[in-house]
Amino acid sequence: MKHYAIESESISVKGDWVKHILSPQKEKDLPELDNKRGLLFSNVTLEKMIDDEMRLDNFALSLDKSRSIRTYSSGEQKKALLIYLINQKPEFLILDNPFDCLDVASVASLKESILELSKVVPIIQLFKREHDILPFITDVLVLEKEKLVKRHSLNSFKESLIHQNKDVFVNALPAAAGKLIEVSQVLVELKNVTVSYDERCIIKKLNWKIQKGEFWHLIGPNGSGKTTLLTMIYGDNPKAYGVDLFLFGHKKGTGESVWEIKEKIGYFTPSMTELFSGNHTAENMIISGLVDSVGLYRRPTDIQQRLAMQWLSLLGLKDKAQTLFYKLSQIEQRMILIARAMVKYPPLLILDEPSTGLDDKHANMMVSLINKIANESDSAILYVSHRTELGLKPDKKYVLTPSAEGSIGEVL
Image (cartoon, rainbow, N blue to C red; front, side, top):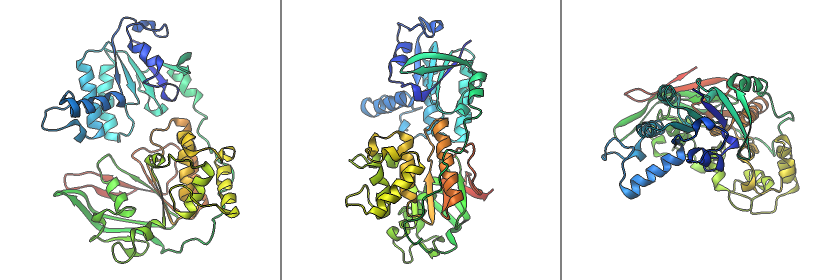
């Protein structure tokens, strides 16, 4: 039985190729699927069914009406969708990046179900990462503009990627704009910190210390408390008060405001790209990091413009300085927002899932940029992800492991 993989950057689940494959009238690309009924396993399908549950009271994915599918974890939602589709008895199935945003345990569980299904049903897998290609895949299809242009065996495709991972950025990081912020040697410290919600313990007796210049990877499955920790450090989570959480030498809640804390922290998460839909150029986006504004609303100085151009040159985006931010590609937007977070060289840089949703090529660019910041600056880095990226070089890992009594933390 043939199973196929297609790099998802070259195709859309709403595009012509997928529509034709799922229609009764097939294209000639995969004649073995002629007259066979296929279904689509995708976030698009999942979102529609969640919407149907809310609007039409159609609980097709929920085990019972007492619990909405919205309350399921990402892994549980995808498992429920797969079970539902299998029960429809498809003659082939298209999997659209099935492992996106899932932790290691959820990936393993979903993969086991798909492996069983592959024994009886042809699979077409859309993927972003070579690592995610399922082991039973026989052929990798290359599409350009929704047209099939080439076929690889799985082995030949993997061989073509062997030399892809390398350092991308050769220029040195630009100098800081001014004098660096003076802070204590210990930037973040947790002493026996326990957090509970509605009598459910999320994290239990965590002890952790982040010092100047260290590069940490915070890792743990979905629901282990990573977001809770981040909002306690960077945000205004009320759970941060009344526990022994120290930021930049001060116990949180004993003097410094949230804004004074945020001045010392650079922060990036992919969802931030949605905040900047106005007429902000790439150059102005970086300059706005110097004045702590969302976009730029004042005339920049020559020094600010020169510094922004140095960052854009490092990123290979000098020719896009006047391009509107929202018109840039996904990886370009993310790199610019990281430059914006770093332009003042904050004592602590927090990167929350910066490579999620990227393909291998662009993930390699992200890893190269993060390693460069770690090697050439004194900023401590807190990198948060359940995925360990190839080539990423953190000094240490802090691992959250869930238990019935709350997640415990361990330094590796």
